[in-house]
Image (cartoon, rainbow, N blue to C red):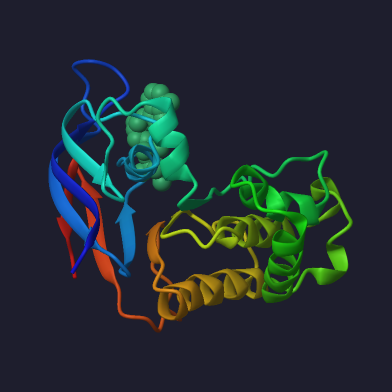
Length: 223
Ligand SMILES: Nc1ncnc2c1ncn2[C@@H]1O[C@H](COP(=O)(O)OP(=O)(O)OP(=O)(O)O)[C@@H](O)[C@H]1O
């Protein structure tokens, strides 16, 4: 099976002589659904950041989507990010853009025309139950609605990999369910690889998943 992520003796830190993740070796198959847990401050978000190139490996090797992340060039990183969908806890929506245009963002970056991106955006807004809010702006939506927009945006360009950092952290039950259903749907129907950082794995998850736990700088496979 193809590997979407391969880490070998990967160490991560923000400063020299500091260790957040120490010599981690693991790999993630294409099409896997993966949860990463760990105590607050254990390095979950740091690991996720390394997977989309926001921080570079301090030592060891990291490959994402066949691309070596060590000393990656800006052009290669931009290319790779076109194949990754990212969902943060704080949404990171563009306030001055309508909901519809926010969801369209990855398609705009990838150079799609309006006749392709329009129907795709409508379909996604339908999945996240927000068609009626398409013309509004992010500050006019609730937190749960904004996170659903972020989820739709992450899926817009049919990424091979979705990285989600506490995607349902502050959400009510309804929005959480919409988010988990979408992640599970992308995984089972589109074979998208999903990596979710969370404090707690939801009991409602139906797809088979792999579970890694971070403790004292080490990443170990729980199941
Ligand atoms: N930009 C940064 N600069 C320096 N240190 C950082 C930075 N971001 C995080 N850290 C430190 O790295 C360590 C791991 O942080 P990280 O955010 O990865 O933890 P986490 O497991 O995601 O925590 P939480 O569950 O609370 O979000 C912490 O000690 C944190 O203070």
